[in-house]
Amino acid sequence: MHWEEVAGCRMPRCVAGHPALDFCNTWAGWREPADPRREWLPDYDHFAVWAMHAGLVTGDACERLRRRAGRSRGAATEVLGQARELRSALYAVLLDGAGGADRSAFATVAAHAERAAGAARLVPAPPVESPGIGGPADAPTARWELSDRSGLALPLLAVARSAAALLTASDRPRIDACPGHDCGWLFLNPRGRRRWCTMSSCGNRAKVQAHARRRRADRTD
Image (cartoon, rainbow, N blue to C red; front, side):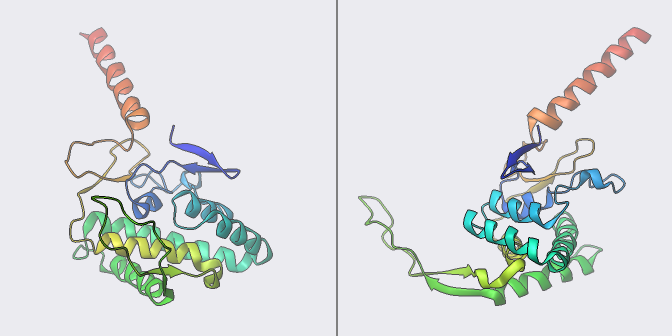
């Protein structure tokens, strides 16, 4: 099954190996004609819950965002539209690369990423316990953080920052798309051995369909 229930919302399972890829996977059937039934983010409420589900915002922040969206529906809808724009552009960039045919897609991703970078602030890192033998010799003094002051844009900024981190990683593993019908989900595939988003869904469905085709072929021989 592709989904699970989180905070009262149906959420696609995080199977990609990176939040930016899981964000792309909030749409299903990338190679198929557009259909609202393939949309996992039908409203801002689902977007806020997904960001928590993917580990990009805290549970407390998610609840605050959901309450704020209820009071500012127009602004929430605008942020959701921007998130969907980023999602489409990011999918194109990840599959085609920055030098691909659709340079406008890269420009869209870059604009969102630059906005996210400008919204981050440097804050003291939380204290860590003294490492034992063989533990890390040094702990970070500070970290970059997106503040709740970002308002309803917080999950969008968090996604954009995650996308930028993936695109700029020097050791980024191979990324593949699931060939399953009505899918196209992305996932990290460092060894090149993974074919499906999950074997339990698209993989098994393909096996069943292949078995049915073989049986039909055997009956016609």
